Length: 111
Length: 116
Image (cartoon, rainbow over all chains, first blue to last red):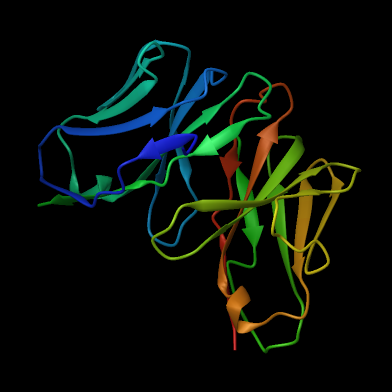
């Protein structure tokens, strides 16, 4: 079983739609949860970063962590064509010694 | 803050030559840097972890004599692909971890290597 599971998509939505991206994991040691956005031929960019369970909002982006279900989500409201990218979830233990990425979900927002 | 640069952004070389890729943390000190490889439409594959002043730790299946990593200072790590072959063509990305913030990584823009 992989440490982190993420549906690779591709996901295609019309502009203005709400997008939901998800990851599941199996390791209870993960305490930090991150979402990265990667445009084609670029390095990943840290979007959201949360500790333990709960929600975090930043503009149109909301990250949710449910540690009891080992499930994390990223919601994008009012999606824009510029949001078209691959979104990778990542998780880390407190020490950072265990750090894993999901495989990434490819998102296309159609104008 | 937390900006990581890579140089070069793109390199084309002949088979058998060596290529050096630099990774720099521009506005912070990075005690640990990571080197990843990414094939088209695939996720990041961790190659090695480098700590300043010590030998890099390589992931299983990564040849340490082929991919030489040097982390000479708190702001610079280099990856040298020795005797490059066409199958080494890939997108190489480094990341850095801030001292005191062990749980996240900040990525460079990547280096695209094409070996002819």
